[in-house]
Image (tube, rainbow, N blue to C red; front, side):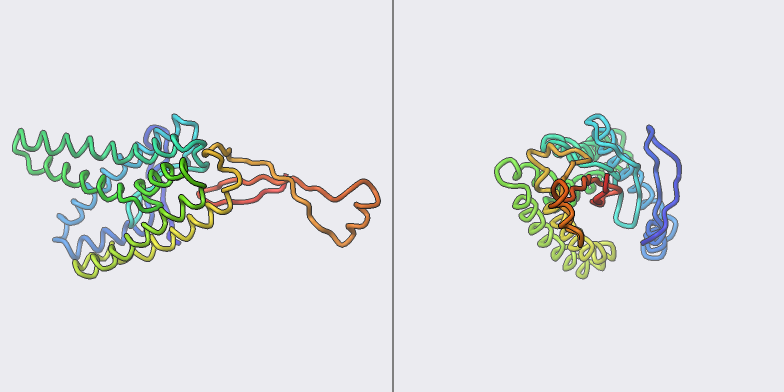
Length: 260
């Protein structure tokens, strides 16, 4: 929806900034004390970048390719171009970001208290909020992915996704109410976005369910499908039905079917 620009790369991961992030900076400038508001938002997004870098590094270590990291109005995202192959991998990747944020929170609050530094204390509180927010068990947030992976060990993948999405929709309503009460524009905008992302997760789960046995699917799952044709009688007469081979792949978080 919005254009993104590449800022550079960190540890081999391209870092992009979405135009919607500039909107957030403008809101912070006018609503939260001018340059100080922009500074706090910039500090928060530096913490978000480290959070997403945690996801990206663990994903790379587990063999899940990451196209880059994008910063936007809603925060950040490590753009994985494949799905985790096991539930344990999903949990490890999802938990890596909050762990980084909690470590930064501990360092910021601990050192800030020891040396009486309000700046370090603020860094600690920002990271504590980031960790807590992302651990809410609502897809597609980190906590929701952890919950889905845990549930999928006891029930089918689709059912686990549906439960996680149901919790996400309760959270979306809560965000909307809280955002209106607190005049928090980011939560007001996030609420319907989270609801729509839940719908997307449900559709993706149903598309990928046949290939998600213990999260053991690969990025390309061969599927043989019979494609009816007007001249199908030729197939019956000369050696059987017309068979074409397809691969199901994920590209930039979308599921596509490619003919081989």
